[in-house]
Image 1 (cartoon, rainbow, N blue to C red):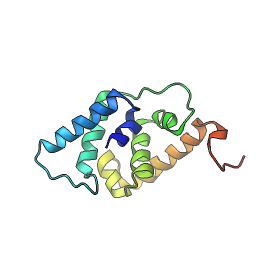
Image 2 (image 1 turned 45 degrees about the vertical axis):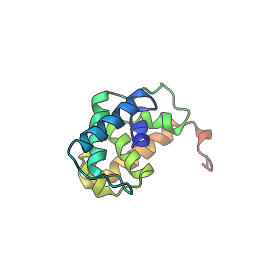
Image 3 (image 1 turned 180 degrees about the vertical axis):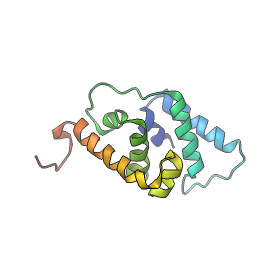
Length: 129
């Protein structure tokens, strides 16, 4: 959960606060917590808390993938984090991000293309020029 918050907001206090708020919101409803797979509702609470926290603290240039992700538009960032790093399916991502399932792949592809543009050419191993 903390890694997801870091992808949305960058490392630091905002990610910690978002993680705490998500768990508090989830556990206050006395729901069981599956330790093998994060419940979609917990991710929804994390995304909501991250949105309320504000924008990520990204620098103007992207030297790493983590920096570049923070420069993505909000929905692309969320879809990228959920699909590429957490391996969730399009239906679950659609529920969490509140985007029609038909548009998830579009958001994900847009994120990939933007990341390719944002990252320095030499940062992608095996990339052909």
